[in-house]
Length: 130
Image (tube, rainbow, N blue to C red; front, side):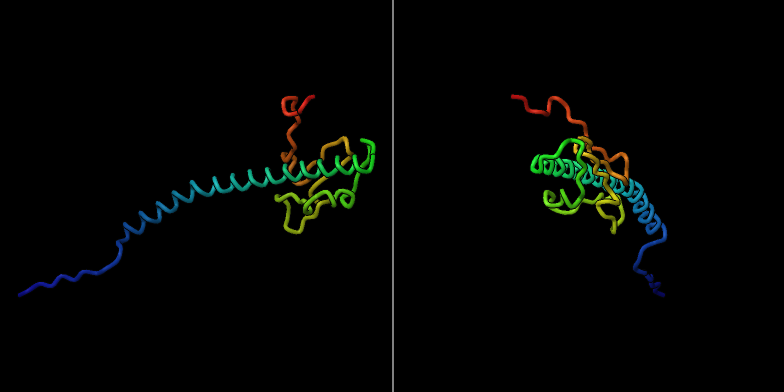
């Protein structure tokens, strides 16, 4: 009598469990890195927006001959900005006034959403002297 061997195609339960464990391990490594990269990029975009706002304030003050104690509105500096600036850490419907405090010409703008979003202080080595 001849015995026939039935072979079924597919994966065993152990193989499936190993694959699921590997995917879980990769996810535990990748997700925190992705969150950190997203937070870091939002911070950099916000700081860049603060620099652009400060530059627009300074340009407005020079062109309109304003004193350092003058406080511009967003409408005053909007022509000096390429687009309306909002902090990316804020909501999708956030406006300029919801995310930034402009202040006077002498004061650097600040982010209302995250106090860690701060323009770096100007150091003496970055300024050009004649």
